[in-house]
Image (tube, rainbow, N blue to C red; front, side, top):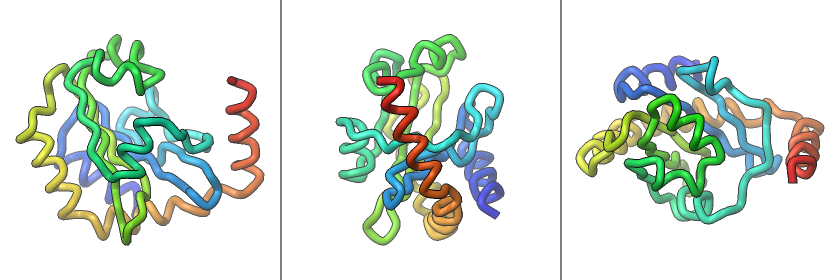
Length: 161
Protein backbone atom coordinates (compact mmCIF):
# COMPACT_ATOMS: atom_id res chain seq x y z
CA UNK A 1 0.00 0.00 0.00
CA UNK A 2 2.80 2.44 0.88
CA UNK A 3 4.40 2.24 -2.54
CA UNK A 4 1.08 2.89 -4.28
CA UNK A 5 0.35 5.97 -2.17
CA UNK A 6 3.79 7.35 -3.01
CA UNK A 7 3.49 6.39 -6.70
CA UNK A 8 0.10 8.13 -6.99
CA UNK A 9 1.51 11.37 -5.59
CA UNK A 10 4.56 11.06 -7.85
CA UNK A 11 2.31 10.71 -10.90
CA UNK A 12 0.32 13.78 -9.89
CA UNK A 13 3.40 15.95 -9.32
CA UNK A 14 5.34 14.82 -12.41
CA UNK A 15 8.95 15.66 -11.63
CA UNK A 16 12.13 13.97 -12.81
CA UNK A 17 13.21 12.68 -9.39
CA UNK A 18 10.70 11.92 -6.64
CA UNK A 19 11.72 10.33 -3.36
CA UNK A 20 10.23 9.87 0.09
CA UNK A 21 12.43 9.91 3.18
CA UNK A 22 11.17 8.59 6.50
CA UNK A 23 12.50 9.53 9.94
CA UNK A 24 12.38 6.93 12.70
CA UNK A 25 13.07 9.18 15.68
CA UNK A 26 12.73 6.36 18.20
CA UNK A 27 15.56 4.46 16.50
CA UNK A 28 17.44 7.66 15.56
CA UNK A 29 17.59 6.74 11.88
CA UNK A 30 16.36 7.94 8.51
CA UNK A 31 16.04 6.17 5.18
CA UNK A 32 14.76 6.63 1.66
CA UNK A 33 11.53 4.62 1.55
CA UNK A 34 10.55 5.33 -2.09
CA UNK A 35 12.27 6.46 -5.28
CA UNK A 36 11.11 6.80 -8.86
CA UNK A 37 14.76 6.30 -9.95
CA UNK A 38 15.91 3.26 -8.00
CA UNK A 39 19.04 2.93 -10.13
CA UNK A 40 20.44 6.36 -9.22
CA UNK A 41 18.58 6.85 -5.93
CA UNK A 42 17.61 3.47 -4.48
CA UNK A 43 15.72 2.93 -1.29
CA UNK A 44 18.44 2.91 1.30
CA UNK A 45 19.74 1.22 4.34
CA UNK A 46 19.14 3.31 7.44
CA UNK A 47 21.50 6.11 8.36
CA UNK A 48 21.62 8.27 11.48
CA UNK A 49 19.27 11.24 11.48
CA UNK A 50 21.26 14.32 10.55
CA UNK A 51 21.29 17.27 12.94
CA UNK A 52 22.07 20.36 10.90
CA UNK A 53 20.50 23.64 9.83
CA UNK A 54 18.55 21.95 7.01
CA UNK A 55 17.02 19.30 9.31
CA UNK A 56 16.26 21.92 11.96
CA UNK A 57 14.46 24.08 9.41
CA UNK A 58 12.60 21.34 7.54
CA UNK A 59 11.99 18.65 10.15
CA UNK A 60 12.20 20.75 13.31
CA UNK A 61 10.29 23.84 12.19
CA UNK A 62 8.19 22.20 9.46
CA UNK A 63 9.31 24.60 6.71
CA UNK A 64 9.49 23.63 3.06
CA UNK A 65 12.98 23.86 1.57
CA UNK A 66 13.07 25.31 -1.95
CA UNK A 67 16.17 25.71 -4.10
CA UNK A 68 15.93 26.63 -7.78
CA UNK A 69 19.63 26.22 -8.53
CA UNK A 70 22.48 23.91 -7.57
CA UNK A 71 24.18 26.78 -5.74
CA UNK A 72 21.15 27.06 -3.44
CA UNK A 73 21.11 23.38 -2.43
CA UNK A 74 24.81 22.49 -2.68
CA UNK A 75 25.59 23.43 0.95
CA UNK A 76 22.99 20.92 2.16
CA UNK A 77 23.11 18.08 -0.38
CA UNK A 78 26.31 16.01 -0.30
CA UNK A 79 25.39 14.59 -3.73
CA UNK A 80 24.96 17.98 -5.43
CA UNK A 81 27.54 17.16 -8.13
CA UNK A 82 25.68 13.96 -9.08
CA UNK A 83 22.37 15.81 -9.18
CA UNK A 84 23.89 18.55 -11.32
CA UNK A 85 25.31 15.96 -13.74
CA UNK A 86 21.81 14.45 -14.02
CA UNK A 87 20.36 17.87 -14.90
CA UNK A 88 18.54 18.04 -11.56
CA UNK A 89 19.24 21.63 -10.60
CA UNK A 90 16.21 22.53 -8.48
CA UNK A 91 14.84 20.85 -5.37
CA UNK A 92 11.88 20.98 -3.02
CA UNK A 93 11.73 19.11 0.29
CA UNK A 94 8.29 19.18 1.91
CA UNK A 95 8.04 17.91 5.47
CA UNK A 96 5.17 15.56 6.22
CA UNK A 97 3.85 16.62 9.61
CA UNK A 98 1.27 14.39 11.26
CA UNK A 99 -0.11 14.93 14.74
CA UNK A 100 2.66 17.42 15.48
CA UNK A 101 5.52 15.15 14.43
CA UNK A 102 7.66 15.23 11.31
CA UNK A 103 7.45 11.77 9.75
CA UNK A 104 9.88 12.61 6.94
CA UNK A 105 9.95 14.48 3.66
CA UNK A 106 8.62 14.36 0.13
CA UNK A 107 11.56 15.28 -2.12
CA UNK A 108 11.20 16.57 -5.66
CA UNK A 109 13.99 17.46 -8.07
CA UNK A 110 13.85 18.80 -11.60
CA UNK A 111 15.54 21.26 -13.96
CA UNK A 112 16.83 24.65 -12.86
CA UNK A 113 14.09 27.10 -11.91
CA UNK A 114 11.41 24.39 -11.84
CA UNK A 115 9.89 25.47 -8.53
CA UNK A 116 8.57 29.04 -8.57
CA UNK A 117 6.22 29.99 -5.72
CA UNK A 118 3.02 28.99 -7.56
CA UNK A 119 4.43 25.51 -8.33
CA UNK A 120 5.54 25.07 -4.71
CA UNK A 121 2.02 26.03 -3.58
CA UNK A 122 0.55 23.37 -5.93
CA UNK A 123 2.96 20.75 -4.56
CA UNK A 124 2.13 21.59 -0.96
CA UNK A 125 -1.61 21.50 -1.73
CA UNK A 126 -1.30 18.07 -3.38
CA UNK A 127 0.57 16.74 -0.35
CA UNK A 128 -1.93 18.28 2.07
CA UNK A 129 -4.83 16.70 0.17
CA UNK A 130 -3.26 13.27 0.65
CA UNK A 131 -1.88 13.83 4.14
CA UNK A 132 -3.76 11.06 6.01
CA UNK A 133 -2.77 8.45 3.41
CA UNK A 134 0.82 9.71 3.25
CA UNK A 135 1.11 9.67 7.03
CA UNK A 136 -0.21 6.12 7.18
CA UNK A 137 2.15 4.98 4.41
CA UNK A 138 5.13 6.63 6.09
CA UNK A 139 4.24 5.25 9.50
CA UNK A 140 4.05 1.78 7.94
CA UNK A 141 7.74 2.21 7.10
CA UNK A 142 8.62 2.81 10.75
CA UNK A 143 9.61 -0.13 12.85
CA UNK A 144 10.83 -2.07 9.83
CA UNK A 145 14.33 -1.44 11.07
CA UNK A 146 15.51 -3.33 14.11
CA UNK A 147 17.75 -1.91 16.84
CA UNK A 148 20.78 -3.69 15.40
CA UNK A 149 20.32 -1.82 12.09
CA UNK A 150 20.16 1.49 13.93
CA UNK A 151 23.38 0.62 15.74
CA UNK A 152 25.02 -0.32 12.43
CA UNK A 153 23.85 2.95 10.88
CA UNK A 154 25.53 4.91 13.68
CA UNK A 155 28.72 2.88 13.27
CA UNK A 156 28.75 3.52 9.50
CA UNK A 157 28.40 7.24 10.17
CA UNK A 158 31.31 7.21 12.62
CA UNK A 159 33.48 5.37 10.10
CA UNK A 160 32.81 8.08 7.52
CA UNK A 161 33.67 10.84 9.97
